[in-house]
Length: 162
Ligand code: FEO
Image 1: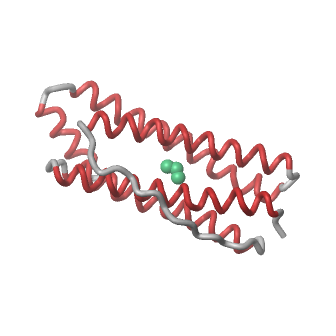
Image 2 (image 1 turned 120 degrees about the horizontal axis):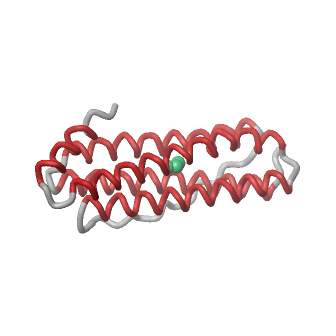
């Protein structure tokens, strides 16, 4: 059985993971609207990955006999100024998520909840990858700068993500 405080915190994280999926779907739609189909595809795959993160928390809560409360998901914005601005936001967002995961780990330690602590280690590692992917793509966009050919090449590369 999971403690009430841990149950509440994990339910909040379910919502945040689905919000991340929503945010990346909005970014995917914006990329599509400016004809950057590779970036759009990359974001759609990322959105699906966020859904699986939400599912992981959900399944864990149920496995521990916790209650699931599905709250409203905040609406993300729909417009960005450039590909660089999108990835600046992705990078900031992922850093925020890392902070959330760390807070959950702190809580699991305080609650002496070893099972939740163990489950969260997957997310601790995942966040290293999430931040690294976002900062790497941001750096590549910055290097491409105003050269349309370079950005077009990057769009092509990102579109290969499955
Ligand atoms: Fe679910 Fe992008 O972290």
